[in-house]
Length: 233
Image 1: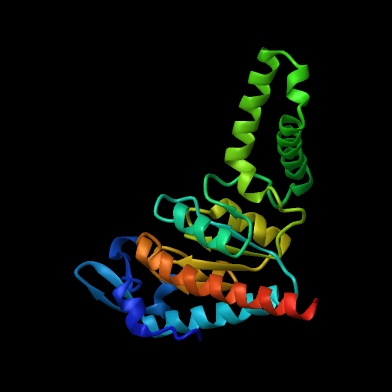
Image 2 (image 1 turned 60 degrees about the vertical axis):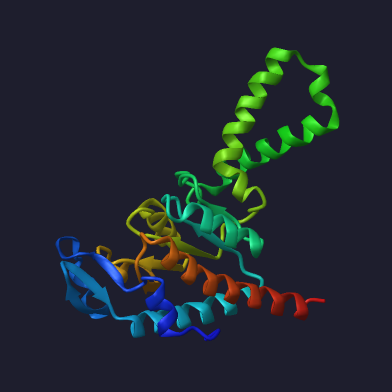
């Protein structure tokens, strides 16, 4: 799908897993071999998982569904933000906010508060309060924006989540599973692929690997959004 080739996966180091000592036995089905103390991932199976994930995401967004991107580790932060912005989807790349899914109504109040502060600032209402009060409100806004700015337009619980490193984002995984929200995730050799709906076995520490996989997932979502807009003209 989308002209994805095994050679592209190979060049991006998608096949390099963790050291053998960090092996999760449940990942065994997706492994090819061991080499110099590392597990090597079977890229043919990875390609199959990317293809099936792309088809799923395209189908979801073609019906107007929203996808939340999650990746807070250093290697994923900028990449997550880039692709999510490109396709106008919400994302979390700083830290997972506890209750974002399971207590969404409360989180939504914080988002509304952040948006209201911004609106008041540009409407001139700031001129009616003291400098001390403006400073206090500014600090509150800065904190809210850092944690929630990337989901400021998320009005409802997302219909699907794309996660980089399901071990790192275990809180997000737990909340999504509790609510029955499907998860598409990059799963390295130290992880349990059975935890999520669409596991993509791949190197989740290499920025090139993360970038390549997100490129295809984002393109699938963009195609779905395009179909949705065409149907609802």
